Amino acid sequence: MCGIVGFTGQLAAAPILLDGLAHLEYRGYDSAGIAVCNELTGKTEVVKAKGRLKILSEKTDEGRAVPGCCGVGHTRWATHGEPSEVNAHPHYSRDRGVVAVHNGIIENYQELREKLQKDGYSFVSQTDTEVAVNMLDYYYRESNGNALEAISRTMLRVRGSYALGVLFADRPGVIYAVRKDSPLIVGRNADGCFIASDVPAILGYTRDITYIGNLEIAELRPDGVRYFNIDKEEIEKPVVHIDWDAQAAEKGGYEHFMIKEIHEQPRAVLDTLGAYIKDGAIDLSCVGLTDEELRALDRVVIIACGSAYHVGVAAKYVLEELAGIPVEVDLASEFRYRNPILSANSLVVVISQSGETADSLAALRLAKERGVRTLGIINVVGSSIAREADSVLYTLAGPEIAVATTKAYSTQLIAIYLLSLHLARARGALGEERLAALIAELESLPGKIERVLGDKERIQWFASKFAGARDIFFIGRGLDYAISIEGSLKMKEISYIHSEAYAAGELKHGTISLVEDGTLVVGVLTQPGLYEKMVSNMVEVKSRGAYLMGLTNDGNYSVEDTANFTVYVPKTEPCFATSLAVIPLQLMAYYTSVAKGLDVDKPRNLAKSVTVE
Ligand code: AGP
Image (cartoon, rainbow, N blue to C red):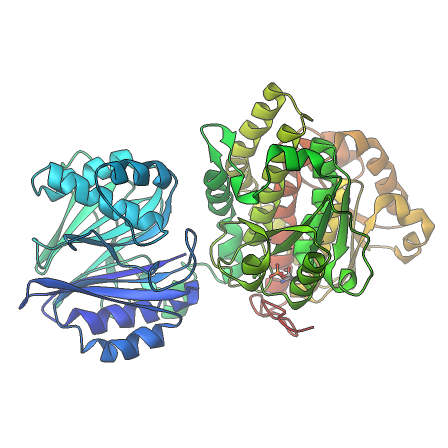
């Protein structure tokens, strides 16, 4: 996510902004900038830089070169528009009458951009933020310089999520802070008033903060803060004392980044859906293929590593079921050294959170050498794979800090569901009614994921019982097998317990010999058509002494006749079940690792992005 800091008071603002942004670096970013009102000249100075904050600090002589006591700063995690100085924040209107920084996603920015262009506005960046800034400028002029009116009307016009820090040139010393869904806080001490997207940015200045509520506005002056609702009515807001230490504050009060990111999944899924579903219809024009070209495809070849590969295994079931197109899935490290048979009408899809995984990048290049159309499903804007693929379907998970992926994995699944429905529509594999029902079910997933997270205490209790296990096996059939392999990897990579995932039908071909008295076996049963078969497999392992955990849909209570412990997830379309069933498995791995006192966020021997072979 992007980072926001603002200050107005008796001290030079720029050094405070740079210091605050430095405390937000953990959030991940690709560029940064500050804007400071120079009281002497009456002008707002804006300085931006691509890359690390150090570059911006050097460019501003650690803030000394940008005088003034009121300003805003920003670290950008690119969602709309490549990482660049032009796309970096702060953004400003044509005469710098309005300057702002933004965290979030303006979903209807294209429509607003067209409207503003008709009103004579021009744009220099590819960002949704510049559209929001010019909307503020438009309504500020319309309201003859009434800041609250301009902000309120902009809030009513804009769809999506935002935390905004806004400066109006003709209101020196005043900062307006506005939020919807993206977090934004206010702080105050004897030297002035602060805004920040997260506590760590201002913890060094004050521990007394106020959380701005949804659709609320804060007006900061050097000597105090006033709060308003969207109707411009003044409201009272409580002050909260923060007693976290700086490290805990970076994790938003969570103990580890991984558990924080597990809990960010509803938001990440919502943001990814919101980027591509407009008024109930899927807009995947980013894939860059016409319906005719989509119909001409004879195969989809999915290539990835690790958890991204596990998304590919799930994708095979989903794409073939919904779009009726043959799908091959391959490990990038294998694909790149095979002599892959690729027809001219294949679509190669490379899935990668970082967009820098060496094997996946090499596999992409091999596919391109063979003249095959390539699509990247990528989380990091402007990464190598994103730049080299013919087209990109970005996930909007935001920066993922924990080495073990969770929210990026979940948004990759969403990308696959969207691609499947996009292909199904183009190929006439699904009727309008069925398509609409599936899209509606997709939009229910964030809420259903939230409900699964509500069960975490039971999972924590169960995980702590098996923290000493020597082996843990996961079994499933069909899509449940794809879920099992991800659950097994999560367990292995952060708890260091040996674990394997098996297609349940394979047990009798050898692997069942590993089951002993008390061996924990997790049976995944979300697929109605395979439910009875799975129960039989679970009975097989139980009769050999296994301790059984069942993971199934609400209502399948008969599982408890066989399983020793059962976890339920809300019902959903069988094709989308992975998005819900994976959550308890992420939590189980997390709590097992915590129970063993291990370094959950940075497991031994692992890197967040494997940029070498
Ligand atoms: C997953 O928890 C691991 N961190 C790892 O398997 C990861 O999914 C794999 O290295 C692929 O990374 P990428 O998505 O950035 O290409």
